[in-house]
Length: 218
Image 1 (cartoon, rainbow, N blue to C red):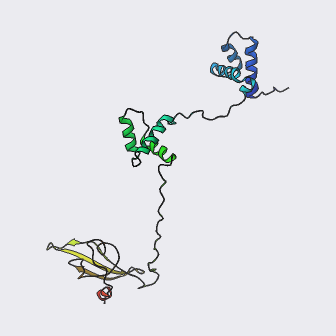
Image 2: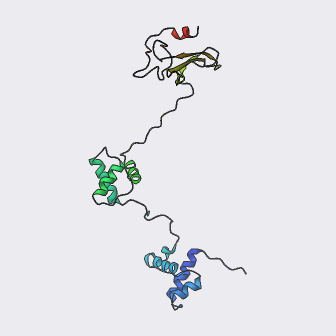
Image 3: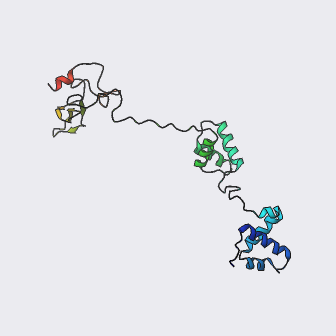
């Protein structure tokens, strides 16, 4: 005849019943007989004293208190300080609270508290532009788009600076023209893309819509 298996709850009930029967001289002997530690035995007896037999049922496995939870009074202090100083960030709040002798969590924890309490709005992710943004001509055929750009500058043996201006076809990448200019100014070229030096506070003027770019490569 096979041995009858008992559940954990039945084992706890039997343990308590045998303890109440006083057939064992000590809790240590009873625990050895049941193959459990004295810590477990005392825990079962305590649960029986608090809740009777129903207290020996399986308990839900959840934290009664998280070991890293910030105390309520600290949260209240952080929130109250932020209300009085709405422009302060987590680091400044931490420094202010610490300087006054209070125990204060890390700046990252303060930031989490502020976000949880609605003081910090989540950042919106910026949409990345595609390879070709709207408004640009597609480079899908030869001579559909030409590009002009200065490829930096370098010094000649004479000490003068040389600014090479290149004009290329966007589809074939064919170099149409390369001019060595002494200065990247309006006298040399007037109209091209929006990058430096063609735009900006001290860039080349782009208000004149003239065909100089075509004239460069004629």
